[in-house]
Length: 504
Image 1 (cartoon, rainbow, N blue to C red):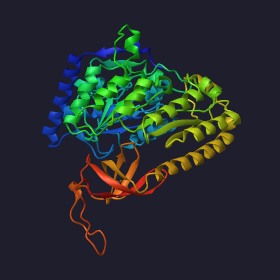
Image 2: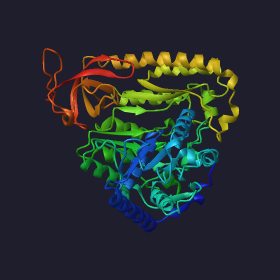
Image 3: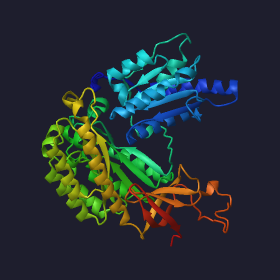
Image 4: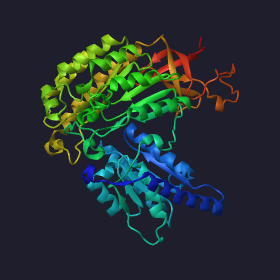
């Protein structure tokens, strides 16, 4: 792993501004020489925390004079934001990075890599050794170091240079002061804390994101209010374990530090907000106060993502999850009693080292009682540097795959049954945009975070088109970020099909 997080070097606010100015001078010169602004492309892997970090990186690049590029191959700066939680994310990153080697000529594209993988020596060394055309690497959550990294690269003499390793650098200051470029203006990702103290035996996050650090309550509320004033209908509060927000402050003696329940209540009351979401919740820290907020505040999403991971108490102990199946099911009962129709989704790992058939059957029993509305299901993936990686037995994978198939089939039945309950109902949907597969289909999400597809066209793309041979389709006035009413006509395992009806 990289150096202890307390041993990082920091860039001050003044230094941040100075390097922003250096890069801005370069982009101005680029525009004078070419008549066009230099372009950037960011490819993000992993969680919504990484999405948030990429939004900050994009905002900084925009402020320095860059504009979005159409592809990595056609851009002047290419950034990869990496994830170390799953092996497939590692493999995809290396594949995409390798694809840039044939086009890397002269000084462009300038290539940078940041994120969780760059907090691990094994990956840092691999990039330096195998992909030496990468210009710089940064750690996780290090957007404030980006102007320095780019300025150092631009100021180099142009000769063959080594990859600049800035993984031990961080920036001082709160994210609220950073420019942000939101891919979805109607949705604001707001980080409330970083890091994790749980040390689940399978998880690399505490080693890549460091210890828990809660952001300022006032800064979070300010950022959320500002986002809503600028058109956001949805706020997503982010943290590796949002339920532990403020715990680090209380450990340092601030006994009156606000809890996540208080923060969620405050943000839910912002006028103009349609829904506030949050992830991820850890069962061991889900308090009765938080359940009461979920029950009483209508703008708090009628959905909670509550990772179970395993229904076996023996496996949960080996995972270091610090709750048992009885406690978890008690939380499920409290949540369903507190809010009618709340959707409960989860994470499940199949094949954790030394999982027995009895352990697997215990997971199925908990699933049967909990009746999850949806689940993210994973085959156990060993992460180098975690305790569980040393317990991994590859010889068991054929059995594990059979268990995984069984679990997925059962969850698919539960997901379909849950979605079918909505058939014939009218629900509100926050419009995200056009379907990727069909420009005549719009998609969005319900208050309880279900994906809905329905016929329609965005006003920005509408040009009275023929809908069928017999009639002309005239859509309602729909834009991204609108909240519309739809009638659910059919349900699938992963989404709902609907038609829009006129709002009252």
